[in-house]
Image (cartoon, rainbow, N blue to C red; front, side, top):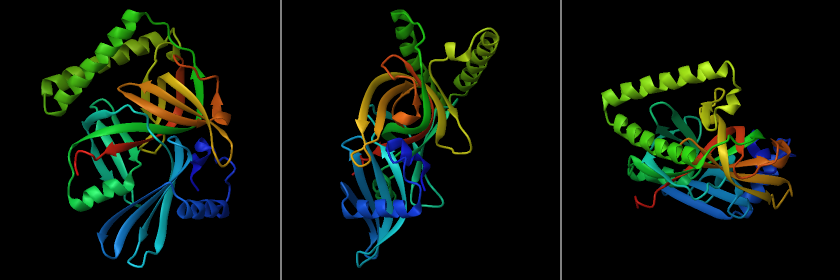
Length: 293
């Protein structure tokens, strides 16, 4: 069973029988059905069922044969990303043990890996052989446990400086990715200087009073991160089936704005714009294929 179901309001699902009933309901009455065919006898099918319009849902993946019989493979909960596209080179890798894909954004100092939600569309892309290097990506996440931190004190000039610094870092990253060895070495030296500064300050200051944005790989799951970021927007929604309350937050973290869903039961503190979010988060996302077909 998928542990992240509770993040979208299914905290009471405890058995395979309950999961099976949920899957049958999704197959009978999906909000979206996406089918891509490799041959007359082999099609991949993705059913999506939303439990808050444009917000949260469950996706089912399986195969369909020539007679239309569906063979279930796996499912996953999802939160629909916000309208914050990030355009960059993205490497797409197939998951070895099931029909699914990881997206990889190589930012030199941090490679961000996320689970791709639009499995059927990406599968069709691979079957057609159209695999570009640059995509428009929207990122979201599901958090099982999170807390709200007070914001750091910043002046308007501090905010402007950090914004310009991040844009400059992105330009450097994209240049370094194309083989600028001197720039790569300089970025590595700059990162070492930052780490030395943080190590020195951490002796007398609390780390959370210094860091307002970070993304650290968490556990053995390649697409799970311990995230700290600034909350831009907050919306409290309700799962239409279970009536559990869910927070949807747009969180600015490093170069990304991530829409994160967390069950109200699992959030410590009151989320408000300007405050910081901290939580272990399973990253998901969609890659836009509109420019391909």
